[in-house]
Image (tube, rainbow over all chains, first blue to last red; front, top):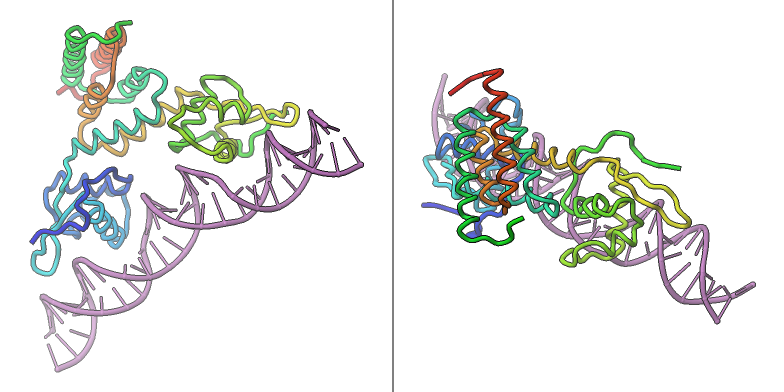
Length: 140
Length: 140
DNA sequence: GACAGAAGATTACACGTGTAGTCTAATGCT
DNA sequence: AGCATTAGACTACACGTGTAATCTTCTGTC
């Protein structure tokens, strides 16, 4: 049987919660001990800390679990892309008021992009531009 | 005389603090009452709340002030671009582990960009690409 | 000169978060 | 059978943050 304390969809993840979620998104459904083991070494938490985070994530509705033997198998309820998007919206919301593109520029500068990724992003920008042309709103 | 509680440079701003900083970045040095008045209407804080935030920002080293008559003129110590960059690094740090470019893609999708901005960003990507060619690290 | 009002300083208080420790029940090993 | 281990539940506790209210001092007004 599956379980999920609140059925509200998750709104946002804290930094530590992100670490845990990343493990589960990458490994798929995992037991607490495995999450603990799979965390990057820089993250140097006690296993209890991981348990706490897992519980909080269940409470938030970001994870649910299934009892397997004497332990839980935690599974992501929310998608990574969804949360990433939320995170992005968060920064845009905070920082915005000024133009958005300086922020994007910052992002691009910070990022370590491969040639291929650069190509993809350029394509994305082009499609944005096509959208614009199709439904122009305020051409500057 | 100028004043700034800690001389450590600021590390990060909370959401509410961002609101206040944006006002000061946009208006230039301002008194508390003017910050209060200049906040967007959606931000519906008591003036006391604004004072609290101003004090916290001074304590953080994001603002300093000069006494003018019976009140303070608050002035930004940190630059907006600096803080934006920090914010960007924050998201990248949290979200990363997976590739960076999906995050960027998210950003681009969320953003409302003008034709001109799109052009600038494409140029930025191109210059990124040139950097790559000049000092290749791991061409995929 | 007395009092209202404004400035900043200090205090408040609940909630999220980082970071565990303790309590209790089940399980496995010897 | 008994004890060490392990799992999850519950508790803890300090710090940042959102969101003010109260206290103290100064100043302008009648």
